[in-house]
Length: 324
Ligand code: HEC
Image (cartoon, rainbow, N blue to C red; front, top):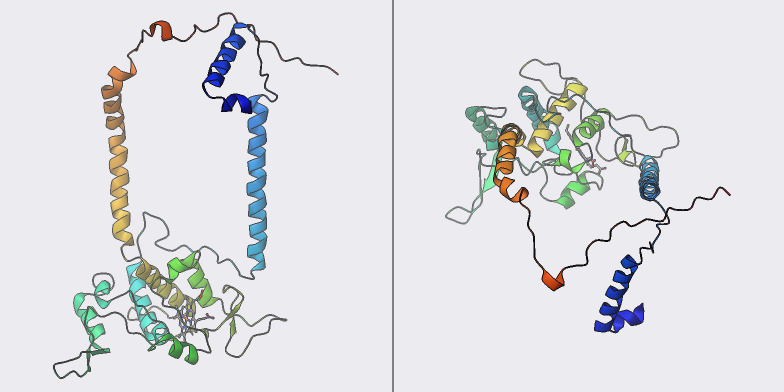
């Protein structure tokens, strides 16, 4: 075969001659060793075995990581046709600014983002103005402090990472702008993390400044339990239990990580409806336009280059079955 391939023009002629003679001699040269059913069955079984094996071993690895999977909670924004609970975002902002913001930054959220989401413009301005920002330099080259404006980002609790680490026993509190996206099953994880602090079980050694939380990978977290009952006074008189505050701040952070969720969902709904409505007319129109091409027959007169006529009356040799 190799020598045939190498010898160029001659080989092509030789092989085409062989093909013609094979057909003319009415014999079937290649009897398939498997029929197709068996072949595809084996491929499917092999694929299933590989996928199953990978799943089994990765599940083992996940269990071994010593981390509890959070349960699924019925968030008001769980499904694409649902929206955020905006009263909860408002309460959550209060929890964030009174509790979490002492250690965590929220770099990607500005006060103007809160307008018409959970505050009116006047309220948001007032909240921003309660904070002091360093700005400048002014005409004399000096930095100065001024009250916050709508265009300011949430204030950073620490000047830099080194300072954050030295105050928090070596661990840097991460920025929370995208935290529900940055963790697997982020919303459920965050709620479970905030409400999941436990006494360390026997046999688990915690270092100074570590707390036990089964939802945190490894179990030992450097964040002290941030929430205690009654820590925040809500304007709407909702009782501020730990789980209520955890739910509210989680909703707030889920909103913060994707403030455009609701617009995107409304737009997506429109697209789906429009596409559904257009499907039938477009399908009809496509058949209408292609009708001419789909129903015509094209014949070529190839003269002496015409391929040999298809062999008639081939008697395919039956596969021999032995009863041995
Ligand atoms: C006393 C400071 C402090 C406060 C207050 C605090 N945190 Fe933390 N937080 C930390 C530190 C430190 C870490 C880093 C923990 C680690 O890496 O072990 C952290 C980590 C986290 C993480 C990341 C966990 C992970 O999977 O990596 C989340 C989420 C979080 N905090 C949310 C919150 C929320 C929400 C609040 C407010 C209710 C809050 N924190 C209040 C100090 C704090």
